[in-house]
Length: 447
Image (cartoon, helix red, strand yellow):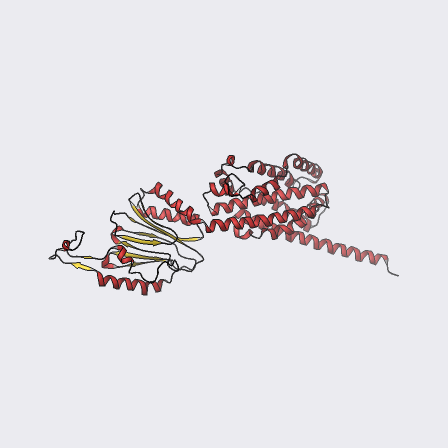
């Protein structure tokens, strides 16, 4: 006959092990969720692209974690593990509720009166209810039941399904500025990919707060049978949010050029009176910051009014003049594209151009009359070469291809061209400038 005390002891050990495993699982899940909150606060867009994988286990243990926290506050001497669970839960709440000043600045750019989605009220409702929810983790144990009632009252009077409404506004994407949340944000941030990332991460944080208060309400009300269903519903929503974020981010990455051309025009119109060095440096900095996934080239030279002293090509930018004071060449390449083989450009293309220069340049001594066969007035004792468009055509075997050379151009040295670009990730320069010496031209290669 089995000893009942032995059976009871085995059952108690089994229950203790099961409880310890559940507690360990909850703590590990909360740690992952805390890291997610930290990534969101840092604006680490790429680190949260699989957010659904993190929130799924978080939502699955959410109700049990809340119940554990309630039990902790009621216990006279909770274990160290339970106390740590309580502190971790409170830390997560604080991180998700942390104010992001960049997100607030972006919200100020948007004219919400032109947007059908009532964002401001949704945000206010979620924060108001969440403020009551997180106090459950803070009040003295004697006030726990009263705080739960305050949270329930706030939820029932204020929340108004704001989380789901915010989700609907985020996903609504008809392409009209007055619809949804994303298109207005893109419009008012002037298609700034970095700012849109911050905006989308801010909305994601709000959605997580909304999910928290909804599941918290169900847990405290004891709606245990529907919690798994609603947890799964929120998991599906975050999968959809995740895909929409990737879609918008990729759209802005691929469709950058039209906005970049507008930005260049706007900058040029506002800053044409700057010196060439300041103009080039500031334009380069502005483009590099906004379009951070591309390496940029900005070339600024003095506009002379003569049509044959510069000739350039730009695959992904513009060749233009600014208010008849500056000639401008702007181009860019994706940072993932390998940089030019500078040594090859120097030894082959530059050497070939220099040889062509030597073969065609003309020298006029002082006893000759250069005006007999040339339109321009020539000073004696000077070298003269072909026009820039002719020198440009010396560059062979490129054709219409934009790879590996995206931009190349010929600029007379008398125009004092200034070149601004950056090093690629492996510290190799994407730009090489060839000096044609007596031909008085610089030839640049960028890619």
